[in-house]
Length: 79
Image 1 (cartoon, rainbow, N blue to C red):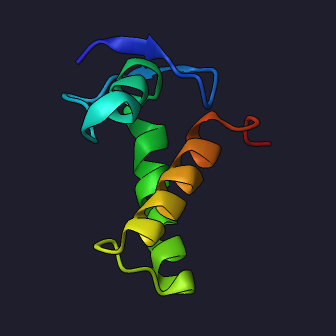
Image 2 (spheres, one colour; image 1 turned 90 degrees about the vertical axis):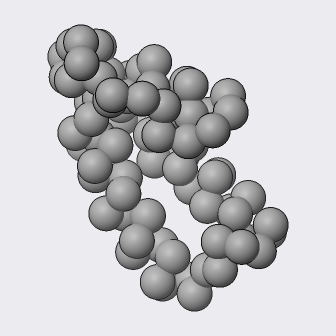
């Protein structure tokens, strides 16, 4: 795992071993998000799934979760 300049935290961090999701979003995350920020997202994702009662097999719920993923990882930097 090579160090990368993370688009979310603006720090140098460890790159993930492989894209965490299939498709373009997974590749974008792999190329520009560090392992630490991805771990933060996984915790936040659990909170979102539980809060909204999402069923990841439902396409509408999956789309909502994808939007939340992009907003968390590529939105404004955390304060």
